[in-house]
Length: 254
Image (cartoon, rainbow, N blue to C red; front, side, top):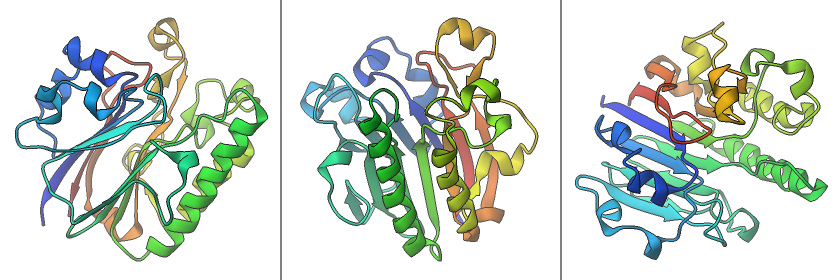
């Protein structure tokens, strides 16, 4: 068994966070795997010091437009296979998926569409989750970790104002049902497993909202049933700033 520390963070701009040394608290802890969402960059726009970080293999799935989206992964463990999709390539979700096959487990790094704005955006989000659930059904018997910014608060304890939140994307009933389906398949919300009644959030709309802790928990590690008893720690690193999201961390024995 190997003890792995995995960190996930929607950083709202990889180049800016790196330039301002706001990534240092993450890299100084030397996690085994680091997942960044909303990197807002293509590979050739990144500092070589970042893409050639000592001890890490670097993987990127940029969005079509470098002004938004895109995800990147740093891993000390070299995967046997990396895909930028679940089952089949889909340009609609470019920059939202990095799918890794490691020796003892699979890791699906995601950044879900937000679903806000025009109706078509919500439709795209629901389509993204339909694909994720279909893929998860095929992987349910394997050791699987699905992690990243899900852009969904699952239950009332995951939002500071559920009565208001239920009217907007990220807490709509037809979004939340996908996380119900993941759990029905046997996937475990690692944070909630170890923090059953804690009302703590990973995302806030503004600095003011963060200070008053008026937010949502949108960032998750979901692990397959086979890994449930291997979770050692799952927490929100709420003291680390630099984005409207806080990093999340999981330590697991695999």
